[in-house]
Length: 119
Image (tube, rainbow, N blue to C red; front, top):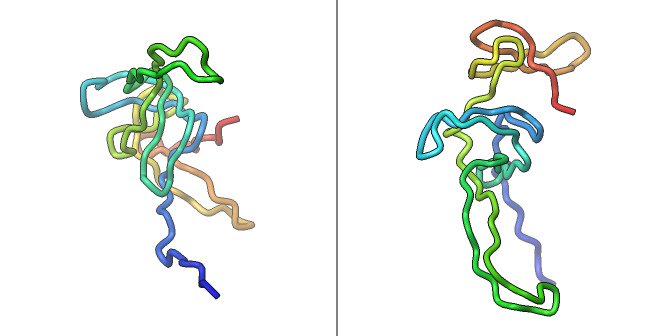
């Protein structure tokens, strides 16, 4: 009987969630803002709407009769983006604070205000 491999190291928490507004701080897309559409925790990457656009050439297939060039957003490393504080509109680092009852909330390091979870 084959045993299933388990990964003892869990993927790290990134502090950025789907739906957050972020600003790119490194690379060709620097100072571009967008909304996080996907979070890839195991690869420590995020996909940001309108950032890091790539083009893929596809052949005609039964599902895509015409083929052609498809544009899509490629993942960007989480260290290259900063969360935007909703109260000030400026990028900020994030720290976590555990409230009474075990509820964790994100806190803006710049302003000290809580950052609400995205919808």
